[in-house]
Length: 319
Image (cartoon, rainbow, N blue to C red; front, side):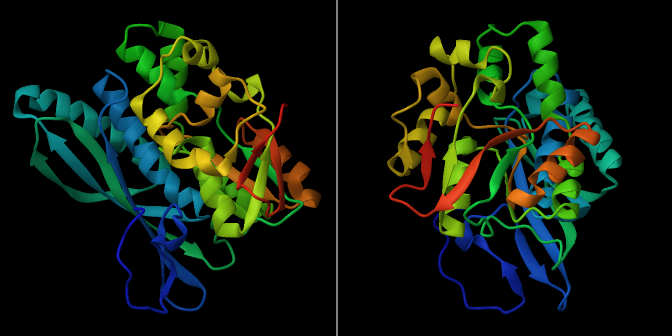
């Protein structure tokens, strides 16, 4: 939420909306806190079971991005009567499958009739003060790691337009339904300083939020290897979601875009569904963290570095 009203100061609140972080954190004492988040959205794939799986992985991601462990969830459903209960059952079973894999108990939920299908979860987890990751901890000299390739918004838009083949659909679905648990655990164990998950605001939007909260500039060197196959080709054909242009209008003022070709630049603003985590790691620890991610079979790319604050939050250079 970008424009929430000011609230009275509560010392039990460790993290709130003021830094645009991934989740709220409420202290239960000096060393432990609740992590709370909510996310739901319209379908990004046609298969109801896969949609449920993706929605669950997406909702849990915010807790992992904070260094926490999700415990419970409440389902949120907006459902058209005309769609039929069998479809709803498949969505719920898909979500339950991922929640079970994450060790999360679904306690209930809430549903409303709506002309447009929407589904997701409110999630509660736990985090210790020592493990807590926020978007405000990056320091000059840190290296930046990304844990899922980009392009889900562009590829799912291609699906809606009948331009995405079966193998590409299976790959992007598998990625969106994959938990960020292993990535979050590795970041905590190997001393990442800051983290955010890359979702609706795209890489450049979430990176800018991290830079602003930390008072630094992020220097990114985009390369083709950062993107799912077909992403850049589709972007060059003007296949991309409306949210991409909204992200670009909102964030481009603070991004130095000049060095990057248009299709790749578009893809850097692409709104992601259940995207990866972006970590800021001290230089001396980055190789150990990267190795830990690979041992856990987490895709990882070093995408840039943190420098002292300059005129813009994000500097893009050729990779």
